[in-house]
Image (tube, rainbow over all chains, first blue to last red; front, side):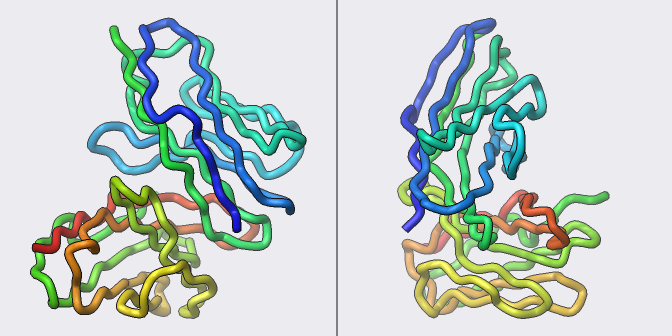
Length: 113
Length: 113
């Protein structure tokens, strides 16, 4: 069965610090990969996605993620976080043949001003 | 385009009752998926509908059901409510014409007393 692991459940950073959130998945076939963000009181929003091609994908608000197939990883990065990045971040995967998203448990990010 | 809309936004029910939640997808989107979000289990896939047909189903009991109408709007129903059904129920829509990206609505917060 597919599964997604997010290694950090809670992350606290100061503004301007760099961010990297880990995401690993288990599935042997072709996958589509996503990062969603849930700001306080708001609904899930798509940050970025990877379907194929360049494994380094750029999303909104300066976020990027790198797909490393050999490591089954899709880590999220941002060079310099802002207070407004405080939110919960979810990594999600679906098999290319299915539209069922499997989510990680989420990482709560708190950015201190 | 307007986003995914869900009604009602909040519901309070008692054990044993049934509930129906509604989802209107983004205009032009033909696929609707439902997810349950709880603090303990995270985000879990319930089912997906496309062209009024259920195409995929998660590991939930038969008390959870859904349907899709010809205008792509979808409803999900939970019968014989249990305390553990308290959750945020999210609807996501997808264009289903090559794009695998799901866009989420704000959710319906169901509380079972």
